[in-house]
Image 1: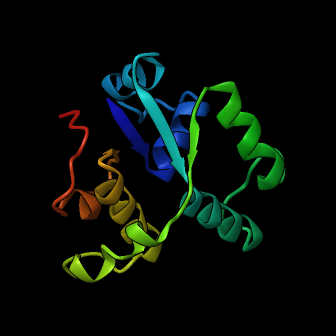
Image 2: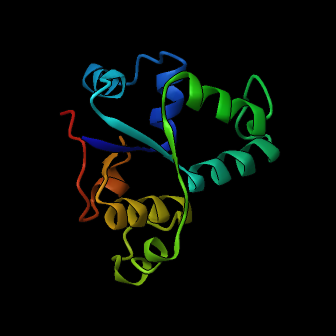
Length: 130
């Protein structure tokens, strides 16, 4: 399985947060799965960190690559084919970061791992943990 992690899923995973369902944790740990973090996610984290809305143990430019490498998670760049999916999305969610996650999942054929009900309303392949 090829999984694209939403921001909160990655943060819950690396901090062993109890809100992360065991099925999601197991899928991320399963070495037969390909796990991705989006460059859009990095952008979101940097913005929230700079605004003081997301405390991290270190600056994002150091923290994120270390955690990705530690957990064998690949980076997914934002590319033009992904952005081209944006006009096709119904206007269900106004968060531009989440909308781009959805576009990347669609363009790259990835399964999106999220607990966000707004994101789950989109026509994208989801990792269902319910």
